[in-house]
Length: 291
Image (cartoon, rainbow, N blue to C red; front, side, top):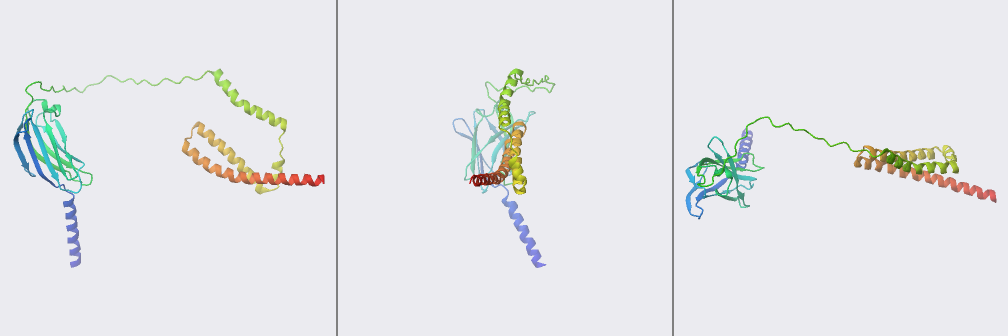
């Protein structure tokens, strides 16, 4: 029982240490509002969860924000979100750059920042966010509220909200069908393609077709089987080429050709050896008759 309690205590302590290690440790949070000339107008050293109150800034001021992260895991994102406290609820995100040492900062000049800051004098809620891929729970800290005054001249005009309404119908225009080639031209090229085969058949008819090799193979089943396999593999290769021209992609064709080529090579070697053997036997027989 005592061993079980010790094991349970060790497990709880390990789980607690894991949870603590997986939380963000942010320190030295410093917020400064400075004039355009560099003079500090306000400085706040913040510590979670306390927030700064009654912050104000002119349109030409600069907000300087800095912090330090003590985790070994560096954040993927660190930013301050400004959300307006009016009916529009505008959100402006300002990202901070974080060095390998864990120190991060940004300088925000309201005069050069997002145009939403120039829509007049408004109050914003500032929220500091830190997140990364290896720590599940992000760091969220409400820094406080700040009132940013609008520019005294040439204020930005908020774009009017477009009402939701039906938009004009979109008419899709499909590509026109491809024009076919002239029948006479296609017939001419078909004739040119078939002409060599016609010449081949004519020459074969003049030379004559001899079935003596097939008859000789019939007496030897092994040679006949090799011949059938060889010619079948050649026909299969031709069929693969035809399939590639019609509908099959390249990689399946390469796989099929690889297998058929090996079969054709092995069987063709036996077939050619058998033909050569019969030829040598025939030559030897003719020589004996002459003697």
